[in-house]
Length: 206
Image 1 (cartoon, rainbow, N blue to C red):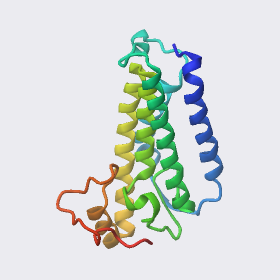
Image 2: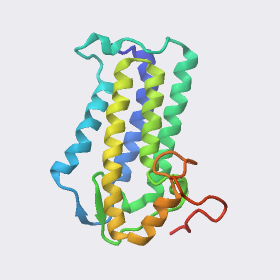
Image 3: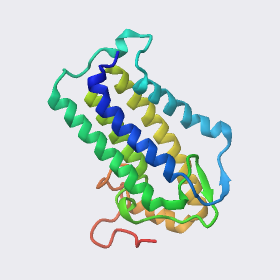
């Protein structure tokens, strides 16, 4: 069971992010093409399982509340800082993505390939930020439920990012192939094998 003293600051950060995300979701571009319901479930289900593991006050399996990290305020606040940083990256990326953003894998009318802001460092900064935020939550709470949630959410991120890449490669075949070769998917400064390096290796912003 969660300790409300520990949970309050973490929950507050997540709720503040969620409020921004809901507000920012308004006024998106009209859809041109979107994934099927079955496709969406392949990443939505593990994401939902991860969210339930993190957010539930009580879970039926008691071992999920056991700790894999010792209880320590230093560890707790280190995790909270990671959480805040991850949510900040997500907001930064969302602002640059603008009206091209969609909750599901989709192409919008007049879809743009964004390569500015955090998109200069990773191709999927929203997912990078999400993984950092969930990892920070897992460290702050130090419970097995959160470690398991991280694994489920990582699966969802992997699946959804692969689908998005297929869509973008279809609509921007040359530009996206170059972008993939020069910018890592999720982890900054880890270039794909065989990618060029140096000051001229980044693609021009669009």
